Amino acid sequence: MDILLPNRTAVVTGAGRGIGQGIALVLAREGADVAIGDINIANAEATAKQIRALGRKAIAIKSDVGTRDGADMLIAQSLKTFGKIDILVNNAGVVGAQGWQERPVPNDDDWQAVLRVNLMSRIYCSEAVMPHMKKRKSGRIINIASIGGIIGGALIPHYTASKAADINYTQSLAAIMAPYNVTVNAILPGLTFTEMLKGIYQQRTLQNRERSEMTPEEILKASEMRTPMGRAQTPEDLGNAVAFLCSDYAKNITALSLDVDGGMRTH
Ligand SMILES: NC(=O)c1ccc[n+]([C@@H]2O[C@H](COP(=O)([O-])OP(=O)(O)OC[C@H]3O[C@@H](n4cnc5c(N)ncnc54)[C@H](O)[C@@H]3O)[C@@H](O)[C@H]2O)c1
Image (cartoon, rainbow, N blue to C red):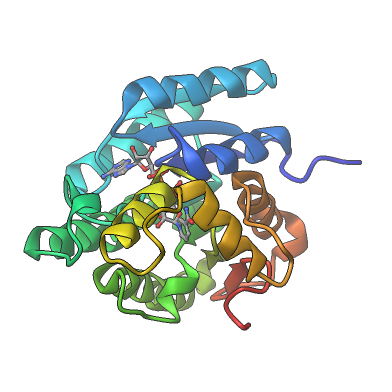
C-alpha cells in the first residue's frame, strides 16, 4: 500500500507520550518527518528516537505551547530544521493545574490551566504557522479536541468547556484559512487509556462516581463495555484519523469535528 504523506513535515505538540506520541508515530509511518514539541524533553526525545528508527527525520523541542513565546519558538525551530511545515497537530492538553487529580472540584487554577493549554496553545501555534502556510497556499491544521467538547458533564466541566472552545475555534480557523488552501479540522477522541485518563479515573474515584474499590483498569473495562465497538481507542487509532485528514484524500474536508470514539458519543 502506498504511504499517505510522502515528503511531508509535521509538528505535533504534546507528542512525548499518549495520543500525541501515537499521532507522531503514525505520521512518520506514513512518510512524514516530525518535530516533537513537549514540556517534557526526555519523553519528546524518546518519541523522536522511535521516529528515527522508522527511517524518518525527527527533532525534539522543549516547549510550553501554552505561552506565545513557547509556540513561536517551536514553530521557528521546526522551520529552521526542516525548511517547511505541511502539518500542525495541536494535541497538547491538560485536565487542570498541578495536582488536579486530587481535587474533586476544579479550582481557579484548574480553569486557567485548561484554557491556557487546551485553547490558547491552539491559537498560539496556529497563529505562528499561519503566515508560512498562507505564503505556500498549502497546509493542514488538526486540533485534538474531545467528545467532551460536545457533551458536558458534572465531572470535569472546565475541561469540557475548553474542548468546546477548541471545536468552535477550529470552525472559525477553517473559514479564515480556506482561501489559502489550508484545511483545519478537529478530532474528538473518546476513551483512550493514557496517563490523562488514569488521572480522570483517579479523580472520579474521589468523587464517588464509580465504586471506589475498582482500579482504573477495571473502570476502563466497564466503560469499554458501554462503547458500541466494545473497546477504547488506541493512540494509533487517533493517528490514523489524523493521517487521513492530512492526506490528499481529504483535501476538500475542512471545519469537520470527527469522533474517533467507537460510537460512544451517540450511544
Ligand atoms: N485520553 C483520552 O481519553 C482523551 C480523550 C479525549 C481527548 N483527549 C485529548 O487528547 C490530547 C492528548 O491527551 P493524552 O490522553 O495523550 O494526555 P497525556 O497527559 O497522556 O499527554 C499529554 C502530553 O502533553 C504534554 N503537555 C502538557 N502541557 C503541555 C504544554 N503546555 N506544552 C507542551 N506540551 C504539553 C505532556 O507533557 C504530555 O506529553 C489532549 O488534548 C486531550 O485533551 C484525550
